[in-house]
Image (cartoon, helix red, strand yellow):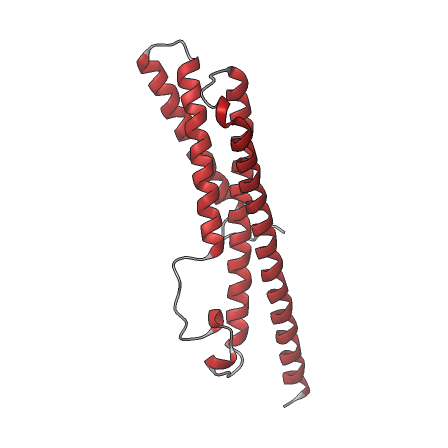
Length: 185
């Protein structure tokens, strides 16, 4: 091999090693924030379970605060997922420069690998999303009972609130967490 080829191989191996470290770090961060959020919700549910039927503006404002936290956690998880996909793509591209048998590669880099539909990070994302939907449902229930408007106006306010929340998720994902754009570190 020429010195140029040696340097290329060394460079690719160092990028591969660094990408693998980033994948592990991204997974650790994702698990940490998701499990912390789930633990927070579990503790809150244990404390507030007997008070869940109380309808007050205080609980409504508190539920909005939790929705904001849940939204931030969801966005972080989506952001980490995009970074992980980015690092995986880099590792796949690097392995194309080497003629290695599939048995020498991790299962996620093999040419004959099976794409799994379900993974742990997708499961954590699903749990966060379901928790957020539950909290939104609870806050809408509180809002429904706290508002002193006509039935049609209440329905419009609830529909507008849902549209606003899901639009915020979509716009934030498209503007900040988009594979087509340069990922901000």
